[in-house]
Length: 264
Length: 297
Image (cartoon, rainbow over all chains, first blue to last red; front, side, top):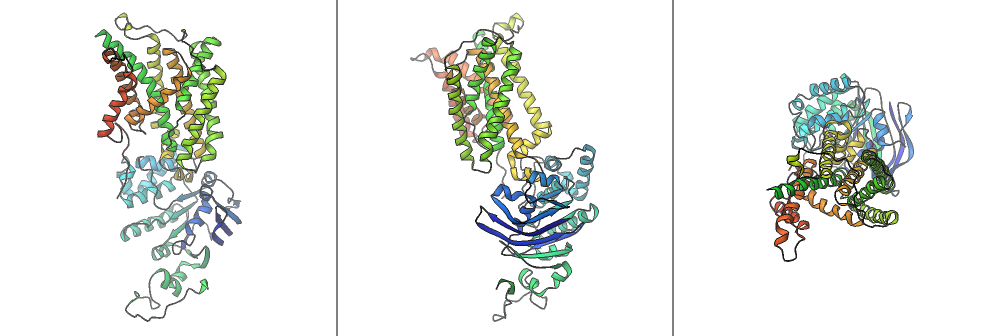
């Protein structure tokens, strides 16, 4: 469904952020894009959704293909119209609008009124909490409620592919679990493919089918989620576990530190 | 009492015009967070257009109004396309600088086409008549103005609150990236906003022409409308209307009663509303109806 082929991204023509990134999202799958800060995960998402162009970024090499169509030169509006819906990092609620208006903005391009109404009910179904708050000014919602609303907004566009950028940001572990569970339900029930950017590696690999690990603008590792979960490097560097799988102890002062071999 | 009512009614007429001009500011502020310094020049152009269409081309008032609106639409589209689209993504300050440039250019256009001279109003608007008990308080032109601006204001509020375009405009004011990511073209939203601002300016200029004629310095009224939006709260439509009425009425009443008492014999009209504005802002820094910034800590 989505193929990213060896793309390079420069900001303002000089700062190279992605150095040949390739990844693929298959129909109906959840794919996780993992890694530490500054790895280029968000930039990769923006390259796909076209939002790079508003930030003086540019895909200089490679191609992005969505359902057989090249989209790397298209405007964000046109890409959204093709069925790619992005949930941006940091929630980005339209604070002075009501919850319902926030959701309806997501369905702006759609012409089928009855379908929009049905989807509104569908969103309320997934997030019952949101339904009770529908007339509330969204800026005053709690962080978890805002995140739910923003995912709902992306869903209102009835997308084929959703790009989720760090939905766990700033949320309590229980809420993260809840939101990830709902994300998986949406994936299965609505047949929406999902590309998920996350720092919370354990939670992300818990629902993903496939995972990619990014570092310094490159993909350094990829594989089925189950395999990645058991990978020693992933455990050590991204989950904070020692090789045995228990919590890492900092008592053993002179422990042998694994090296990130792919950085050499 | 008659004197007072006369002052109040003409104040309402003037106030509605202030409100229209102030709404032009609010629309641009809402979508691009920049003050449109050129709004006063739109008004001046509207005044001259009214003069041209009514006195020179002898069009009936409604046709003149439609023609002026058409010019306003074209002007708005041109301004957005040529002057402001290249600035998308740039800082608010550069947008404001661009509107300063626009105001100078439009001022020049006024001089080029009409010579910037004073053109008095010589009739042409429909002369509605009220029952005789009221008709001594308000001139037919002022009445026209009040009715027309009330229609415009109500239409605008309805568009903002109940239509999809209005929703898109309000959303763009909040976060243009989000709006883009759901597939709305922000450039279209901007173009619509500039068209509305231009049309508001042109219409209020025509109304003003029907009350007091037109001249180059008419564009100074933009500054007064600036005070109006500060009083009403810079991003509130309802606030702009109410503040416009307050300023219009206060100005008339103050100059009617207090000007004769001053040794200089006048001039209070242009100062008094701002005194009230300063007092209000001391106690309500967001203006009367401005939105408080929502911030979760």
